[in-house]
Image (cartoon, rainbow, N blue to C red; front, side):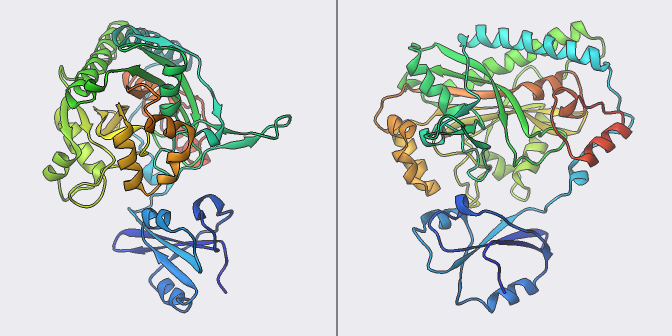
Length: 422
């Protein structure tokens, strides 16, 4: 007999299909309570076919969002790439050892952060401000990321009217703050953003704890173009190069590896260049070839019918955003250091909400303010603090520059391979 709350996976042609069976309700993602998992092969479909009169099969989240209600249980068929175990994702460079002791690493982390943020503030004309650790989920201010990550929420003992929700980023809050604090055109803010992303798949460069500099700047409407975006990317990249130069003077083992200029390419150009590869594989090949790359126009569907990567529809304009990636020889990977973009205006927000199948968000306070032209036009982004410390200090694992929780297998493997987690 089928369970009301059940999830199963089966391998087929190197893909994994995720089947979720839900009871009848209008918002299945937010009301699924528990699940169990197991690996199955093709016979699962034969089993499910016995229940075809009770089930509705859906293949995309967009289809699910468009459904107002369901008269049957729902089978959500979600195709993703091969699922890797923790140890398959963890990279252990041969003969790796940290050039710095744990004590000296802590000193170096402060050196990197102090130098970089002072340069960032001066170059982009940003004022440091205090930022929230949590927000009210009904405000629409939390970052939905790719739309499926679950934020950490909690109740409040002496405030029954509100639920707290740990921020996943401050992408939306910053724009709201620029208006509230009275910033003018070409002025901006930056803040230390600490977040918990409990659904993050941890590896050498991913942690459930996220620390980054979140920054946002007021611009004119006529600045909403690729030229302005590229010039801002160049300014951020110059700061990265100056930081590397500074650290190479402070520490003998650090050599300058960043190229003089960053290479610009759109996601469609990248797909045309490497049509047979996955988006992550494309990023690796272009970044290894160029050293430092700015990949633009992320979020919308490409000619292949698939987006390069997911982006929430209500902060970046998908035609005016970018990721900064550098080649990292310690791990032989393309390492993303920053994600940024010119934010949605009233027109692009409406269009992207429709494309994402979540027009209901237009009723939330933040999104409504954009549609009513009540918030300033802005550009902004996030720069990973642990990521840049890891890169500049030539560490093999992000846990060497931040304190977090790791699977026991990760802790054991790192200890056996010269990787000292904080």
